[in-house]
Length: 228
Length: 402
Image (tube, rainbow over all chains, first blue to last red; front, side):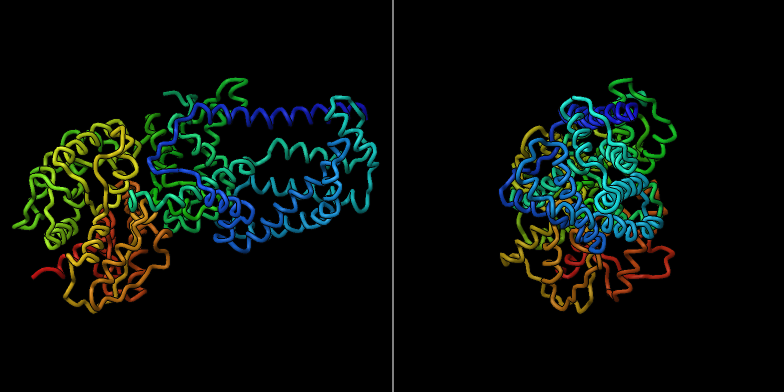
């Protein structure tokens, strides 16, 4: 298990480096890009920001485009956030009270997550085969499905040694090497987590910014020609 | 230019973030007029974004920064260029985008990038700068023919005035009933207006902007703006959506500062005249009219209600709507300067517009864009469904005639 522990620990650091490296490369691009080439006011307003936050939280634009998909996507994203928050207890020591208080919700979200993924795939696949098929999106959904099912199996049937899981993860986070638990399901789960980190979709961070921009654009749309 | 060179030189930080924000959900395909007629996902909005992101990743991504940029396959670059120029840039994808990407602005900038690399534009579009440089218009027509064939007799053009009228090249050379209607209505309103001479009224720059050929834009814009400034113009009127779009959104950028006059679409001016009692339509028209929103007028600058107000001011008119109208209108096929380069697509899109107008039992299909006017008339030729096509000002002008 020592080799597996070394490989997985290095894999964790490598995936984090790729994640942050990719974003550093993006920030460099943003910094050297052209200034806004629009004459239309993009003046941010409290109202536009409030509406944008509502859009981000409700996925309003997806609701308008496809209500059947919207319900699946919204449940998936919300449950994903709660599952992530629940997992913070493995990465923090001491564990803050608010993380403890989210454990029950996190467990429920853990049950809902794979169901929502199956729903999304059921809605999307028949249509996407005819229209636009994004193989990267499909692989990502399958990856998260494996991740969530393996997590659920560990929660319900094949319980790993939770103490050694925490020791292993805290070892990585604090740069003090610790052995990976000798549990095949956990290793699969962890590898999927690393794969997700490397392939984390960029829209997670970019879409909220664009939604804010879209609301600002809408708010100032009537000044394009009407009130100038 | 090498295929390893960066692809982000023409994009703003907001547009780079927009590329990252695309979720590849494909919902926009339902609204893409190109998809309606070709059904080819390879030229769909998410695929264009995905491929462009691949170009950026290969040249400026993390791996490229650590180990050097990768060479991009020439065929892939050419296919992308064709896809980006086949688009009508109508912006329906962005209007319905689940994260709100401003595609009506993004596609022209991608086109500019491909032009910079010597891959675009496609076909006859490449000759546009030279033609405009030589003749002042993209139709390779002499300035002497710009106004004379259609300008109504007894039209009094003031030497200088608060109001100026810009006819635009497409209206002047290929949709003359439309511009004649404009001037008939201006004459009926009775306010003095001025125009630049046929030699001075050059292209507004839109055909160059939309095909990514920006080199001449500053010169054209400065010539026009200074021409109107010399005539002490306070309001510049125009009926062409593409001209109005570039005038409001981009002329200040190329002029270098705020314009010394306001830009107004002609329907705005007509609505003011109707409200102020300067214009009244007395003749009755007992017909069902269906109005098509031009993409660069509705999604571009938000002129949606004014044309409808003008049509409703005609006694007896029953106004119908397309399924997709207003901000969600479907491109008739004339957009993006793709009409001449991909005529089959354009024709098929035009026929979808005609078919819907016929299905809704409209007596006339009302347009308010010279490019739409020319395209839908072309699409009607040889088509099994027929309807009467008229420009909004052409119709109004005909009802004002003594």
